Image (cartoon, rainbow over all chains, first blue to last red; front, side, top):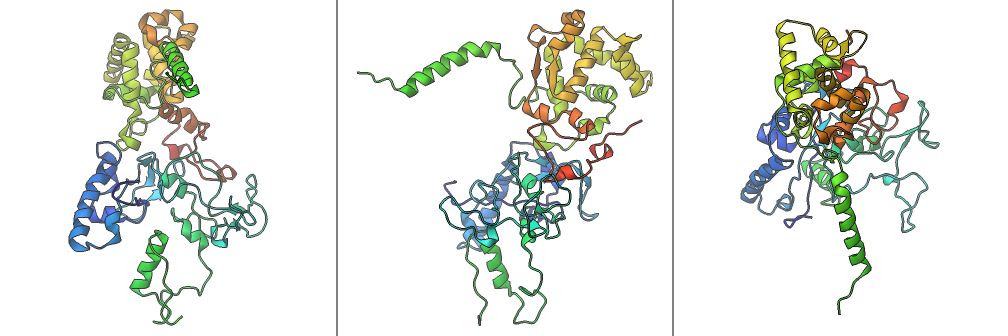
Length: 227
Length: 207
């Protein structure tokens, strides 16, 4: 834990740029080619952003965070960027990331996910949201069966200490790749949140921001007004 | 009165034991073997000819942690036999200037008649090939098979050892076999139920 507060870590995905990328106009290739020890670039970005936060939003909670490092793929089948989305190389589904080893030691100290019916070490039941889902939804995971069911959130222990290597396991509810986003495996069928519905159902910017903060562990979600 | 705890005894024993064992440990069997110097293009092209894998694939511009295995391997060969390595690179340059195809160069370096090339050029060609494939320096195996090779290999390198965990993990044998090394996998849970990636995905083209 750093003396300046909690640490946050931004995961970089193939397709969409993260805050670091878009704000510094750096490309994946630039980052991977850049010399220096792991984290050197992140240190420079931290200084830049910290100064900006202090100037623009001095009370922002983000002043208490710092970027540990980022990972970039070094091997993809088709490069992204101006030509569109990058296509992962099936031989290197994690993209052979640089930096090789990087983990979020404060928020992801373990591979999350439990099976239905398991209990925590203190004997409490596992909340449904923390249980690994299986496809189809019933039956035990059959690791040697190509027909499944398979886990789509969590999964077997991996021999990696790498953000994107673990996140490359992420799948949608259909079991196909969800582009490194675990939360898509918990997507609801319909009706829970309508982003394009009536004004009463659509998320306001404030509500959307609350969701982001909740996901980042910085804030509890607020109930929409009137509920 | 000085109290000697069990921890002190263990620490002392560990220190003495470590000191006794250290001289016997291979120099390069580290978790990470840092590159000593930049590999010349000739070394990368020679490796490409020996393995049949494109030089740009063997030594990509963008690599994890900016560590070039070509640099690591070249640095080791220079320590293992500076003169042998210089002679081999000179021989490769001659053949390249003669516009020999990579497979012809590999044939000339590795084969002599119906058997292996027993010259030092042959020895270092084999050692380089095996380094790329297995991440291992096979000095002892080379000398066991062809004793005359010992004359071109430094004493410290007349043994077999894994160069580093990264070298082991990066071994091309795993990609040629369309699999992954024991203890490391870049593939996801359940990947074994799917067909492996093609050789082309690994950058390997078959003539």
